[in-house]
Length: 103
Length: 155
Image (cartoon, rainbow over all chains, first blue to last red):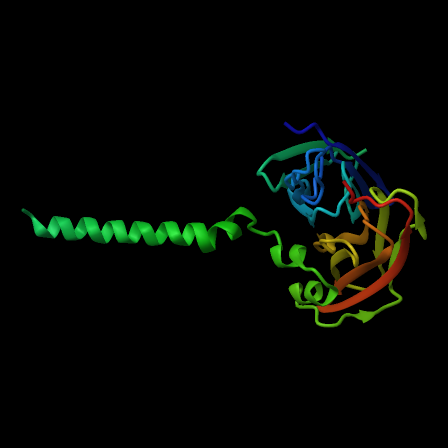
């Protein structure tokens, strides 16, 4: 199964900055292995971030996003100790959810 | 023999078949990707990509700012950031014109989320990077050329 995400969330001057590093192969389905067989696509398709159960970002990824995707965004509000939950789903139905406290 | 029972069975079987067909042919792809915008991610040219978002021809806007390197040494990891200074920005889409799948990522921003996202994308070759922004129901865009010295989509 997928490795945990590394999430940092820091609140400053009323804005919380979130940085997420996911661990995923993000295979495009374009590449071939040494035998010439196409490596099937395997990539994250959807991601959502919730701050105390309120949706703050939803994203859709295509295969053009880099291996081990990085994502940074900011939302207004958020205080130290608040809960931030990030969930992704990939095209094979795998999913992973991690949560952090806003620092 | 009870004919009525046979008919009921047949009718039931027929319905089941229809259900299967529907599931295999029409409903399944959408169920698997309930929210994922298949049309957009399959788009092979800019017009098709814009059409997938019903964006028509987005106007170029100086209020949409792309942060990306002028030259990316490694096309597998190109940092791209998009900032929109337009009020009521609700969606940001990052597209790479010369990639096989042009749409890299879409971000839907609920109210309260700052229109400032950064991610990393793959680029197969030197290409224009487009940022499309939906703000207050209208579409705007910006583009920036990123030169790639080593492609990120080769095998």
